[in-house]
Figure 1 (tube, rainbow, N blue to C red):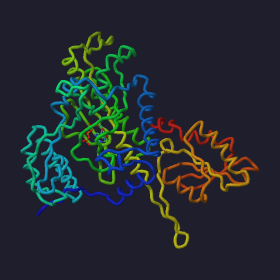
Figure 2: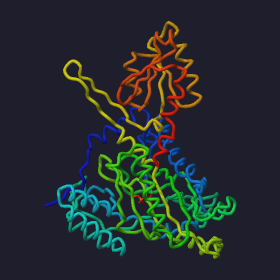
Figure 3: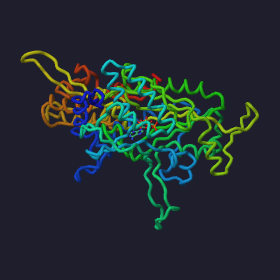
Figure 4: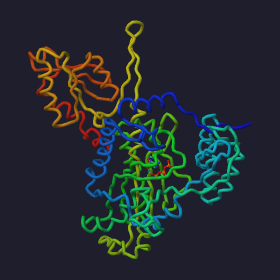
Length: 493
Ligand code: ATP
Protein backbone atom coordinates (compact mmCIF):
# COMPACT_ATOMS: atom_id res chain seq x y z
CA UNK A 1 0.00 0.00 0.00
CA UNK A 2 1.26 3.47 -0.79
CA UNK A 3 1.18 6.31 1.70
CA UNK A 4 -0.04 9.78 0.94
CA UNK A 5 2.65 12.17 2.12
CA UNK A 6 0.56 15.21 2.73
CA UNK A 7 -0.46 16.16 6.25
CA UNK A 8 -4.07 17.24 6.80
CA UNK A 9 -4.58 20.70 5.42
CA UNK A 10 -7.48 23.06 5.81
CA UNK A 11 -7.05 23.84 2.16
CA UNK A 12 -10.33 25.65 1.68
CA UNK A 13 -9.61 28.26 4.35
CA UNK A 14 -5.99 28.70 3.31
CA UNK A 15 -7.01 29.24 -0.32
CA UNK A 16 -9.46 31.89 0.83
CA UNK A 17 -6.76 33.66 2.86
CA UNK A 18 -4.38 33.65 -0.11
CA UNK A 19 -6.95 35.06 -2.51
CA UNK A 20 -8.13 37.57 0.09
CA UNK A 21 -4.52 38.73 0.46
CA UNK A 22 -4.31 39.40 -3.24
CA UNK A 23 -7.79 40.81 -3.77
CA UNK A 24 -7.44 43.42 -1.05
CA UNK A 25 -3.90 44.61 -1.69
CA UNK A 26 -1.94 42.71 0.93
CA UNK A 27 0.29 40.35 -1.08
CA UNK A 28 0.84 40.01 -4.84
CA UNK A 29 2.93 37.44 -6.69
CA UNK A 30 6.20 39.08 -7.74
CA UNK A 31 6.33 40.37 -11.35
CA UNK A 32 2.87 38.96 -11.92
CA UNK A 33 2.50 40.38 -15.43
CA UNK A 34 5.24 37.90 -16.40
CA UNK A 35 3.40 35.10 -14.59
CA UNK A 36 5.26 35.59 -11.33
CA UNK A 37 8.51 34.30 -9.91
CA UNK A 38 8.23 31.22 -7.75
CA UNK A 39 8.39 31.84 -4.00
CA UNK A 40 8.86 35.58 -4.36
CA UNK A 41 6.09 37.97 -3.33
CA UNK A 42 5.41 41.69 -3.17
CA UNK A 43 3.48 43.45 -0.46
CA UNK A 44 0.69 45.72 -1.66
CA UNK A 45 -0.75 48.92 -0.27
CA UNK A 46 -2.35 47.29 2.76
CA UNK A 47 0.27 44.58 3.18
CA UNK A 48 3.09 47.07 3.52
CA UNK A 49 1.23 48.93 6.28
CA UNK A 50 0.53 45.72 8.19
CA UNK A 51 4.10 44.50 7.77
CA UNK A 52 5.57 47.85 8.83
CA UNK A 53 3.36 47.85 11.91
CA UNK A 54 4.43 44.30 12.71
CA UNK A 55 8.09 45.24 12.39
CA UNK A 56 7.52 48.25 14.63
CA UNK A 57 5.81 46.08 17.23
CA UNK A 58 8.92 43.87 17.26
CA UNK A 59 11.42 46.74 17.27
CA UNK A 60 9.67 48.54 20.09
CA UNK A 61 9.38 45.34 22.14
CA UNK A 62 13.04 44.48 21.68
CA UNK A 63 14.88 47.81 21.45
CA UNK A 64 12.61 50.37 23.06
CA UNK A 65 11.52 48.23 26.03
CA UNK A 66 15.00 46.91 26.85
CA UNK A 67 17.60 49.47 27.81
CA UNK A 68 20.38 46.93 27.17
CA UNK A 69 19.35 46.21 23.56
CA UNK A 70 20.26 48.44 20.62
CA UNK A 71 19.75 48.08 16.88
CA UNK A 72 21.85 47.95 13.72
CA UNK A 73 21.12 47.90 10.01
CA UNK A 74 23.92 45.95 8.33
CA UNK A 75 24.47 45.56 4.58
CA UNK A 76 23.15 42.50 2.74
CA UNK A 77 26.52 41.91 1.08
CA UNK A 78 29.25 40.82 3.46
CA UNK A 79 32.86 39.78 3.12
CA UNK A 80 32.74 36.20 1.73
CA UNK A 81 34.88 34.87 4.60
CA UNK A 82 31.94 35.68 6.89
CA UNK A 83 30.12 32.68 5.44
CA UNK A 84 33.14 30.42 5.79
CA UNK A 85 33.37 31.37 9.47
CA UNK A 86 29.65 30.96 10.07
CA UNK A 87 29.67 27.46 8.57
CA UNK A 88 27.26 28.37 5.76
CA UNK A 89 29.65 27.65 2.87
CA UNK A 90 30.24 24.11 4.06
CA UNK A 91 27.14 23.32 6.07
CA UNK A 92 24.10 25.31 4.92
CA UNK A 93 22.61 22.48 2.96
CA UNK A 94 19.25 20.82 2.68
CA UNK A 95 18.91 17.19 1.63
CA UNK A 96 17.02 17.06 -1.65
CA UNK A 97 15.48 14.27 -3.67
CA UNK A 98 13.91 14.26 -7.13
CA UNK A 99 11.04 12.20 -8.40
CA UNK A 100 12.12 10.80 -11.76
CA UNK A 101 8.60 10.71 -13.19
CA UNK A 102 7.27 14.14 -12.25
CA UNK A 103 10.78 15.73 -12.32
CA UNK A 104 9.75 17.53 -9.14
CA UNK A 105 12.31 18.25 -6.45
CA UNK A 106 11.57 17.82 -2.75
CA UNK A 107 13.33 18.31 0.54
CA UNK A 108 13.90 14.76 1.71
CA UNK A 109 13.51 15.71 5.39
CA UNK A 110 10.22 17.51 4.71
CA UNK A 111 8.81 14.43 2.94
CA UNK A 112 9.51 12.37 6.05
CA UNK A 113 8.19 15.08 8.40
CA UNK A 114 4.94 15.27 6.43
CA UNK A 115 4.61 11.52 6.61
CA UNK A 116 5.08 11.75 10.38
CA UNK A 117 2.39 14.47 10.63
CA UNK A 118 0.03 12.35 8.54
CA UNK A 119 0.62 9.39 10.89
CA UNK A 120 -0.08 11.57 13.93
CA UNK A 121 -3.29 12.84 12.30
CA UNK A 122 -4.34 9.24 11.67
CA UNK A 123 -4.01 8.47 15.41
CA UNK A 124 -0.52 6.94 15.18
CA UNK A 125 1.42 9.68 16.94
CA UNK A 126 3.96 7.30 18.51
CA UNK A 127 4.86 5.93 15.11
CA UNK A 128 5.15 9.45 13.72
CA UNK A 129 7.41 10.55 16.60
CA UNK A 130 9.64 7.50 16.16
CA UNK A 131 9.98 8.34 12.48
CA UNK A 132 11.05 11.91 13.26
CA UNK A 133 13.60 10.65 15.76
CA UNK A 134 15.03 8.28 13.17
CA UNK A 135 15.22 11.12 10.65
CA UNK A 136 17.01 13.37 13.16
CA UNK A 137 19.57 10.62 13.86
CA UNK A 138 20.25 10.10 10.16
CA UNK A 139 20.61 13.82 9.44
CA UNK A 140 22.89 14.25 12.43
CA UNK A 141 25.12 11.49 11.03
CA UNK A 142 24.85 13.02 7.53
CA UNK A 143 23.62 9.59 6.38
CA UNK A 144 21.92 10.52 3.11
CA UNK A 145 21.63 6.91 1.98
CA UNK A 146 19.82 6.22 5.25
CA UNK A 147 17.34 9.06 4.56
CA UNK A 148 16.72 7.60 1.08
CA UNK A 149 16.14 4.14 2.58
CA UNK A 150 13.69 5.65 5.06
CA UNK A 151 11.66 7.25 2.25
CA UNK A 152 11.56 3.95 0.39
CA UNK A 153 10.73 1.95 3.51
CA UNK A 154 7.84 4.31 4.34
CA UNK A 155 6.58 3.96 0.76
CA UNK A 156 6.43 7.74 0.42
CA UNK A 157 5.29 8.77 -3.03
CA UNK A 158 5.41 11.98 -5.04
CA UNK A 159 2.10 13.87 -4.72
CA UNK A 160 2.30 14.81 -8.43
CA UNK A 161 3.24 11.54 -10.14
CA UNK A 162 2.08 9.25 -7.35
CA UNK A 163 5.20 7.09 -7.82
CA UNK A 164 8.10 6.19 -5.57
CA UNK A 165 10.63 6.45 -8.41
CA UNK A 166 13.19 8.56 -6.52
CA UNK A 167 16.75 9.68 -7.21
CA UNK A 168 19.31 9.38 -4.44
CA UNK A 169 19.32 12.06 -1.72
CA UNK A 170 21.87 14.86 -2.30
CA UNK A 171 22.94 17.95 -0.38
CA UNK A 172 22.03 21.32 -1.85
CA UNK A 173 23.55 24.63 -0.68
CA UNK A 174 20.91 27.25 -0.08
CA UNK A 175 23.00 30.38 -0.54
CA UNK A 176 22.58 32.60 -3.61
CA UNK A 177 25.89 33.80 -5.00
CA UNK A 178 26.75 36.66 -7.30
CA UNK A 179 29.82 38.48 -8.58
CA UNK A 180 31.10 41.73 -7.17
CA UNK A 181 32.84 44.13 -9.59
CA UNK A 182 33.37 43.51 -13.27
CA UNK A 183 35.58 40.41 -13.27
CA UNK A 184 33.74 37.15 -12.88
CA UNK A 185 36.12 34.83 -11.14
CA UNK A 186 35.98 32.74 -8.01
CA UNK A 187 37.69 35.39 -5.88
CA UNK A 188 34.90 37.88 -6.57
CA UNK A 189 32.05 35.60 -5.56
CA UNK A 190 29.91 36.99 -2.79
CA UNK A 191 26.67 35.76 -1.28
CA UNK A 192 23.31 37.28 -0.58
CA UNK A 193 23.11 36.84 3.18
CA UNK A 194 21.07 33.77 4.18
CA UNK A 195 20.45 35.21 7.66
CA UNK A 196 20.78 38.63 9.27
CA UNK A 197 22.60 37.28 12.34
CA UNK A 198 26.11 37.50 10.89
CA UNK A 199 25.71 41.23 10.25
CA UNK A 200 25.24 41.53 14.01
CA UNK A 201 28.19 39.31 14.96
CA UNK A 202 30.70 41.16 12.78
CA UNK A 203 29.54 44.44 14.34
CA UNK A 204 29.49 43.16 17.90
CA UNK A 205 32.71 44.94 18.97
CA UNK A 206 31.85 48.15 17.13
CA UNK A 207 28.55 48.38 18.96
CA UNK A 208 29.92 47.20 22.31
CA UNK A 209 32.71 49.79 22.26
CA UNK A 210 30.87 52.78 20.76
CA UNK A 211 27.73 52.12 22.79
CA UNK A 212 29.71 51.26 25.96
CA UNK A 213 27.53 48.18 26.27
CA UNK A 214 27.99 45.84 29.22
CA UNK A 215 27.31 42.11 29.07
CA UNK A 216 24.49 41.08 29.11
CA UNK A 217 23.40 43.17 26.14
CA UNK A 218 21.67 42.62 22.84
CA UNK A 219 21.83 43.81 19.24
CA UNK A 220 18.67 43.71 17.14
CA UNK A 221 18.22 43.89 13.41
CA UNK A 222 15.42 43.68 10.85
CA UNK A 223 16.43 42.90 7.31
CA UNK A 224 16.21 40.80 4.18
CA UNK A 225 17.65 37.30 3.93
CA UNK A 226 17.85 35.05 0.88
CA UNK A 227 17.69 31.28 0.60
CA UNK A 228 17.45 29.20 -2.52
CA UNK A 229 14.77 27.02 -0.96
CA UNK A 230 14.24 23.71 -2.72
CA UNK A 231 10.58 23.49 -1.91
CA UNK A 232 8.93 26.83 -2.08
CA UNK A 233 5.31 26.44 -1.13
CA UNK A 234 2.56 27.68 1.11
CA UNK A 235 2.60 31.26 -0.03
CA UNK A 236 4.76 33.58 2.08
CA UNK A 237 5.59 30.79 4.52
CA UNK A 238 8.65 29.72 2.54
CA UNK A 239 10.07 32.39 0.29
CA UNK A 240 13.40 32.77 -1.46
CA UNK A 241 13.65 36.41 -0.40
CA UNK A 242 12.26 37.14 3.03
CA UNK A 243 12.69 39.32 6.07
CA UNK A 244 14.00 38.34 9.48
CA UNK A 245 13.79 40.12 12.81
CA UNK A 246 16.74 38.89 14.82
CA UNK A 247 18.27 39.71 18.18
CA UNK A 248 21.58 38.37 19.43
CA UNK A 249 21.97 38.58 23.20
CA UNK A 250 25.60 38.55 24.42
CA UNK A 251 26.09 36.94 27.83
CA UNK A 252 28.58 35.44 30.25
CA UNK A 253 29.55 31.87 29.32
CA UNK A 254 27.67 29.49 31.60
CA UNK A 255 24.61 31.74 31.95
CA UNK A 256 23.09 30.64 28.64
CA UNK A 257 20.34 28.38 29.96
CA UNK A 258 18.95 31.12 32.20
CA UNK A 259 18.79 33.59 29.29
CA UNK A 260 17.55 30.95 26.89
CA UNK A 261 14.59 30.22 29.20
CA UNK A 262 13.91 33.90 29.70
CA UNK A 263 13.89 34.75 25.99
CA UNK A 264 11.83 31.69 25.21
CA UNK A 265 9.08 32.95 27.51
CA UNK A 266 9.36 36.60 26.52
CA UNK A 267 9.10 35.83 22.84
CA UNK A 268 5.98 33.69 23.33
CA UNK A 269 4.40 36.56 25.27
CA UNK A 270 5.11 38.87 22.30
CA UNK A 271 3.32 36.56 19.87
CA UNK A 272 0.30 36.50 22.17
CA UNK A 273 0.45 40.28 22.62
CA UNK A 274 0.22 40.91 18.87
CA UNK A 275 -3.00 38.91 18.84
CA UNK A 276 -2.07 35.30 18.09
CA UNK A 277 -4.17 33.11 20.41
CA UNK A 278 -2.37 30.99 23.04
CA UNK A 279 -4.00 27.77 21.81
CA UNK A 280 -2.54 28.27 18.33
CA UNK A 281 1.02 28.68 19.64
CA UNK A 282 3.36 26.05 20.98
CA UNK A 283 7.03 25.33 21.60
CA UNK A 284 8.81 22.65 19.64
CA UNK A 285 12.29 21.73 20.90
CA UNK A 286 14.73 20.80 18.12
CA UNK A 287 15.39 17.09 17.68
CA UNK A 288 18.49 17.88 15.66
CA UNK A 289 20.62 20.79 16.89
CA UNK A 290 22.28 23.01 14.29
CA UNK A 291 26.08 22.97 14.22
CA UNK A 292 26.23 26.15 16.33
CA UNK A 293 23.62 25.46 19.02
CA UNK A 294 23.57 23.78 22.43
CA UNK A 295 19.84 24.31 22.94
CA UNK A 296 17.14 25.31 20.46
CA UNK A 297 13.39 25.60 20.35
CA UNK A 298 10.91 26.78 17.76
CA UNK A 299 7.77 28.73 18.44
CA UNK A 300 5.16 27.22 16.16
CA UNK A 301 1.86 28.66 15.01
CA UNK A 302 -1.11 26.58 13.93
CA UNK A 303 -1.54 27.55 10.27
CA UNK A 304 -4.44 26.02 8.32
CA UNK A 305 -1.78 23.58 7.04
CA UNK A 306 -0.68 22.58 10.55
CA UNK A 307 1.68 23.73 13.31
CA UNK A 308 4.78 25.30 11.70
CA UNK A 309 7.76 27.32 12.87
CA UNK A 310 7.51 31.09 12.98
CA UNK A 311 10.45 31.79 15.33
CA UNK A 312 13.60 30.05 16.47
CA UNK A 313 15.30 30.63 19.82
CA UNK A 314 18.83 29.30 19.85
CA UNK A 315 21.60 29.14 22.38
CA UNK A 316 24.54 29.60 19.98
CA UNK A 317 27.39 29.38 22.55
CA UNK A 318 30.54 31.23 21.41
CA UNK A 319 30.44 29.45 18.06
CA UNK A 320 30.00 32.52 15.87
CA UNK A 321 32.23 35.02 17.66
CA UNK A 322 34.84 32.31 18.26
CA UNK A 323 34.94 31.45 14.58
CA UNK A 324 35.03 35.08 13.48
CA UNK A 325 38.04 35.53 15.81
CA UNK A 326 39.71 32.56 14.15
CA UNK A 327 39.00 33.59 10.57
CA UNK A 328 39.55 37.35 10.94
CA UNK A 329 42.46 37.02 13.37
CA UNK A 330 40.94 39.93 15.33
CA UNK A 331 40.25 39.69 19.04
CA UNK A 332 36.52 39.70 19.76
CA UNK A 333 36.85 39.39 23.50
CA UNK A 334 34.99 41.30 26.14
CA UNK A 335 36.58 42.42 29.40
CA UNK A 336 34.10 41.67 32.16
CA UNK A 337 34.74 44.01 35.10
CA UNK A 338 32.52 41.83 37.29
CA UNK A 339 34.64 38.71 36.75
CA UNK A 340 37.82 40.68 36.08
CA UNK A 341 38.62 38.64 32.98
CA UNK A 342 38.38 38.52 29.20
CA UNK A 343 36.17 36.10 27.33
CA UNK A 344 34.29 35.62 24.09
CA UNK A 345 30.64 36.12 25.09
CA UNK A 346 28.07 33.40 24.60
CA UNK A 347 24.98 34.23 22.57
CA UNK A 348 21.27 33.52 22.82
CA UNK A 349 19.47 34.37 19.61
CA UNK A 350 15.82 35.06 18.88
CA UNK A 351 15.02 34.90 15.17
CA UNK A 352 11.54 35.47 13.84
CA UNK A 353 10.35 35.71 10.25
CA UNK A 354 8.42 38.89 9.45
CA UNK A 355 6.69 37.21 6.51
CA UNK A 356 5.72 34.09 8.40
CA UNK A 357 4.36 36.10 11.31
CA UNK A 358 2.50 38.29 8.81
CA UNK A 359 0.95 35.15 7.34
CA UNK A 360 0.08 33.85 10.82
CA UNK A 361 -1.66 37.16 11.58
CA UNK A 362 -3.59 37.04 8.32
CA UNK A 363 -4.69 33.41 8.78
CA UNK A 364 -5.75 34.14 12.33
CA UNK A 365 -7.55 37.37 11.47
CA UNK A 366 -9.58 36.04 8.54
CA UNK A 367 -13.13 35.72 9.83
CA UNK A 368 -16.33 34.72 8.09
CA UNK A 369 -19.43 35.57 10.06
CA UNK A 370 -23.05 34.70 9.50
CA UNK A 371 -25.75 36.43 11.53
CA UNK A 372 -29.55 36.25 11.48
CA UNK A 373 -31.76 33.82 9.68
CA UNK A 374 -34.10 33.82 6.70
CA UNK A 375 -34.51 37.32 5.35
CA UNK A 376 -32.27 38.76 8.07
CA UNK A 377 -29.38 36.44 7.24
CA UNK A 378 -26.18 38.40 6.70
CA UNK A 379 -22.72 37.24 5.75
CA UNK A 380 -19.67 39.26 6.57
CA UNK A 381 -15.93 38.78 6.05
CA UNK A 382 -13.54 40.80 8.16
CA UNK A 383 -9.95 40.74 9.38
CA UNK A 384 -9.76 40.62 13.15
CA UNK A 385 -6.34 42.28 13.31
CA UNK A 386 -4.95 43.90 16.43
CA UNK A 387 -5.86 47.62 16.08
CA UNK A 388 -2.19 48.64 16.50
CA UNK A 389 -1.27 46.45 13.52
CA UNK A 390 -4.24 47.14 11.23
CA UNK A 391 -3.19 48.88 7.98
CA UNK A 392 -5.84 51.60 8.33
CA UNK A 393 -6.85 52.73 11.80
CA UNK A 394 -10.04 54.55 10.96
CA UNK A 395 -12.23 55.42 7.97
CA UNK A 396 -14.04 58.73 8.00
CA UNK A 397 -17.35 58.47 6.18
CA UNK A 398 -19.95 61.20 5.61
CA UNK A 399 -23.28 59.46 5.26
CA UNK A 400 -24.22 61.64 2.29
CA UNK A 401 -22.26 63.74 -0.19
CA UNK A 402 -24.24 66.90 0.54
CA UNK A 403 -25.46 69.27 3.27
CA UNK A 404 -21.92 70.11 4.37
CA UNK A 405 -21.25 66.59 5.68
CA UNK A 406 -18.16 66.01 3.48
CA UNK A 407 -16.63 69.26 4.74
CA UNK A 408 -17.22 68.26 8.33
CA UNK A 409 -15.81 64.77 7.71
CA UNK A 410 -12.76 66.10 5.87
CA UNK A 411 -11.96 68.31 8.83
CA UNK A 412 -11.85 65.22 11.05
CA UNK A 413 -9.83 63.30 8.46
CA UNK A 414 -7.25 66.08 8.10
CA UNK A 415 -6.85 66.22 11.85
CA UNK A 416 -6.54 62.45 12.42
CA UNK A 417 -4.10 61.89 9.55
CA UNK A 418 -1.46 63.82 11.49
CA UNK A 419 -1.45 60.97 14.01
CA UNK A 420 -2.28 57.79 12.16
CA UNK A 421 -3.14 56.15 8.85
CA UNK A 422 -6.77 57.01 8.09
CA UNK A 423 -8.90 57.07 4.94
CA UNK A 424 -11.76 59.27 3.75
CA UNK A 425 -14.52 57.80 1.59
CA UNK A 426 -17.79 59.26 0.38
CA UNK A 427 -18.66 56.96 -2.53
CA UNK A 428 -21.32 54.19 -2.30
CA UNK A 429 -23.75 53.33 0.49
CA UNK A 430 -22.50 53.41 4.06
CA UNK A 431 -23.00 49.61 4.27
CA UNK A 432 -20.74 49.02 1.29
CA UNK A 433 -18.14 51.35 2.73
CA UNK A 434 -18.23 49.49 6.07
CA UNK A 435 -17.66 46.19 4.21
CA UNK A 436 -14.68 47.62 2.34
CA UNK A 437 -13.08 48.53 5.66
CA UNK A 438 -13.98 45.19 7.28
CA UNK A 439 -12.09 43.20 4.66
CA UNK A 440 -8.88 45.12 5.30
CA UNK A 441 -9.31 45.02 9.08
CA UNK A 442 -9.96 48.71 9.82
CA UNK A 443 -10.96 48.72 13.49
CA UNK A 444 -13.02 51.95 13.47
CA UNK A 445 -15.42 53.58 11.02
CA UNK A 446 -16.43 57.11 11.86
CA UNK A 447 -19.74 58.17 10.36
CA UNK A 448 -20.56 61.86 10.03
CA UNK A 449 -24.32 62.51 9.85
CA UNK A 450 -26.75 65.39 10.19
CA UNK A 451 -26.65 65.23 13.95
CA UNK A 452 -22.89 65.87 13.69
CA UNK A 453 -23.68 69.33 12.29
CA UNK A 454 -25.90 70.11 15.25
CA UNK A 455 -23.96 68.78 18.24
CA UNK A 456 -20.41 68.02 17.03
CA UNK A 457 -20.70 64.28 17.63
CA UNK A 458 -20.08 61.31 15.33
CA UNK A 459 -20.68 57.57 15.52
CA UNK A 460 -17.87 55.10 15.83
CA UNK A 461 -18.60 51.64 14.46
CA UNK A 462 -16.46 48.89 15.94
CA UNK A 463 -15.24 46.31 13.42
CA UNK A 464 -15.55 43.13 15.50
CA UNK A 465 -18.97 43.75 17.02
CA UNK A 466 -20.39 46.20 14.42
CA UNK A 467 -21.76 48.08 17.45
CA UNK A 468 -21.90 51.84 17.20
CA UNK A 469 -21.37 54.49 19.82
CA UNK A 470 -21.80 58.23 19.68
CA UNK A 471 -18.83 60.34 20.73
CA UNK A 472 -17.88 63.99 20.78
CA UNK A 473 -15.56 65.00 17.91
CA UNK A 474 -13.21 66.68 20.35
CA UNK A 475 -12.73 63.35 22.17
CA UNK A 476 -12.25 61.30 19.01
CA UNK A 477 -8.52 61.71 18.53
CA UNK A 478 -7.52 60.69 22.04
CA UNK A 479 -9.96 57.81 22.13
CA UNK A 480 -8.76 56.24 18.86
CA UNK A 481 -5.12 56.98 19.54
CA UNK A 482 -5.35 55.07 22.78
CA UNK A 483 -6.87 52.02 21.12
CA UNK A 484 -4.41 51.83 18.21
CA UNK A 485 -1.34 52.62 20.29
CA UNK A 486 1.56 50.14 20.40
CA UNK A 487 1.27 50.55 24.13
CA UNK A 488 -1.61 48.05 24.05
CA UNK A 489 0.90 45.46 22.81
CA UNK A 490 3.93 46.47 24.85
CA UNK A 491 2.03 46.42 28.14
CA UNK A 492 1.38 42.70 27.68
CA UNK A 493 5.00 41.61 27.22
P1 ATP B 1 12.67 26.05 8.23
O1 ATP B 1 13.05 24.86 9.09
O2 ATP B 1 11.19 26.26 8.12
O3 ATP B 1 13.39 26.08 6.92
P2 ATP B 1 14.69 27.46 9.64
O4 ATP B 1 14.75 26.68 10.91
O5 ATP B 1 15.70 27.24 8.61
O6 ATP B 1 13.21 27.34 9.01
P3 ATP B 1 15.79 29.79 10.83
O7 ATP B 1 17.07 29.66 10.12
O8 ATP B 1 15.73 29.43 12.28
O9 ATP B 1 14.66 28.99 10.03
O10 ATP B 1 15.24 31.26 10.59
C1 ATP B 1 14.50 31.97 11.55
C2 ATP B 1 13.15 32.38 11.03
O11 ATP B 1 13.25 32.96 9.73
C3 ATP B 1 12.18 31.23 10.87
O12 ATP B 1 11.56 30.93 12.10
C4 ATP B 1 11.21 31.78 9.86
O13 ATP B 1 10.21 32.56 10.49
C5 ATP B 1 12.06 32.67 9.00
N1 ATP B 1 12.37 31.99 7.75
C6 ATP B 1 13.36 31.10 7.52
N2 ATP B 1 13.34 30.68 6.24
C7 ATP B 1 12.31 31.33 5.64
C8 ATP B 1 11.79 31.34 4.31
N3 ATP B 1 12.33 30.62 3.34
N4 ATP B 1 10.71 32.13 4.05
C9 ATP B 1 10.15 32.89 5.02
N5 ATP B 1 10.62 32.92 6.28
C10 ATP B 1 11.69 32.16 6.60
